[in-house]
Length: 338
Image 1 (cartoon, one colour):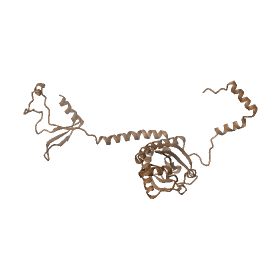
Image 2 (cartoon, rainbow, N blue to C red):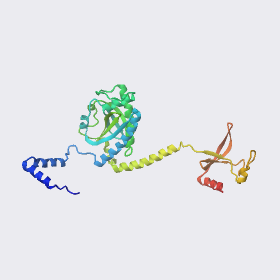
Image 3 (cartoon, helix red, strand yellow):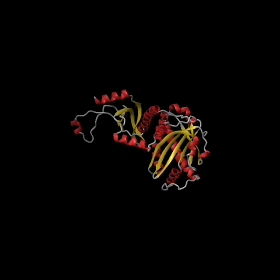
Image 4 (spheres, rainbow, N blue to C red):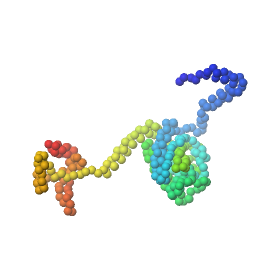
């Protein structure tokens, strides 16, 4: 990197400012020191490494994409969501930052011990409820506590979000989120001591013209058993493996419903072009099999079964008498080509 070099005019201007006293050298030096020093509280040391925070962010970016699709379907409107920040801080700092009243869902994270919380901004909550009840999605001018009907509606939304959150976390660790209750006063929700460090994932969600925040707060003590699995390298490896396995399973499920042509072949015969052109109504074509021989059941372009022809309730049908192996099917194809 090439260092910046002052021109002669800039040097003269700097010397003039220093001599006149308009620039304080001591203040400039002190300011530079403050910018280069990052405050660190030894009473509350960081629990998550940068790599772990990066993995957590990638997990919730996947969750934000899924949430966008799910909310769009539920509220029948354009929705956008993104991860704003992934931080670690004391639990009491998080609680003091929340408005009151708000919507807080208390969560269980099975098989982990302890609780987490998901907080949804009141403006966003009332906009979602209004749209799901047939309104235009206008938020309330003044926040208030939810009615019983509104709690039922928003609980349905939260349950769907927890399903998506569980799916996003499954790329790293098998965690099942369970809804354990709802609270409106942040100070009534004590999932851990106020001085304990927590993970805070903040997501910005916009529903039509209304914008709000969703916070996911998980105490470090709850995540401690699985914290070793939280690395970007592990996330990429797990995502690639699970996506491949999931793609195969999804493809297999879809293939089961694909329609394929199935035909019964009574036999074969070889005719000259002259004989074919001379065929008329009433002519009999001699086939290579007898009336007692099983007939081939062709699936697509391969003979997969042998069957016995007959009638079923007045309609023609066939009873499968043998499932052909790959080698037997290949032998039949070679015989037909000859």
